[in-house]
Length: 264
Ligand SMILES: [Fe+2]
Ligand SMILES: [Fe+2]
Image (cartoon, rainbow, N blue to C red; front, side, top):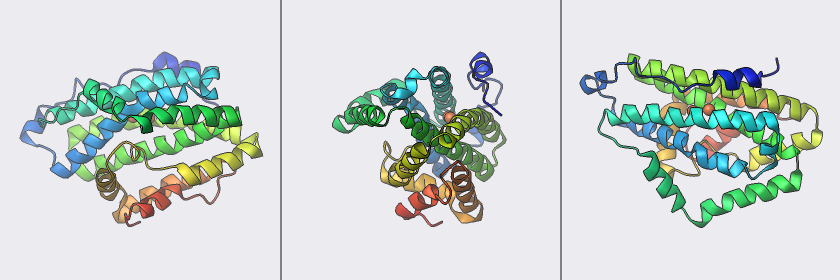
């Protein structure tokens, strides 16, 4: 079914948590391993604005549906960061959005080159770039849902689980948008299929791995994507990606995990 962008923009709201008993974390704090993973997730959610900036230099922003989606999506991801930062705050861990932004600005050349590269690539391949962007977005959002659901499963903390369930529900709408766009665009162009296949295979990396330290990436992937249930979750994301037109056989998540030395 086609994604209803008008309905999405009209119903986009911040994830709410004011009814959740965050005070309970004082009595039942989360373990250090999980806090480290939540910290990673917070950083990634807050980084969305930089990712959005990069994409505003590509043909994607000229498409009205994509532009409208990205505006609301960017806000929702920011609020996911706020909610997770509040959980960390109850554990005495401060993640300030402004501070993070300042750190990102200091990343220097690497960060500065990203939008230029994106924009050059965008101009080079024209509208087929949007297909790459949409399939990439679908892979990232599937990863996000998987990560939040895995975390909720592992921790079995009712307050955290409820918050993560609410976030995952919004991630599911993001998946729906990216998937419906990717499916249509890939089905319409074999050139887009080839390009997307190449880009995902060659350049895709787990969400956050280009901005976080490698040992943090390994920690998060090991916690969430290993063991019987974790490995199954990784395979499920790969199956979903491979079901898009022209992407059969791709195993980008499992390949990335192996590349990081994380057992799958
Ligand atoms: Fe999110
Ligand atoms: Fe999302």
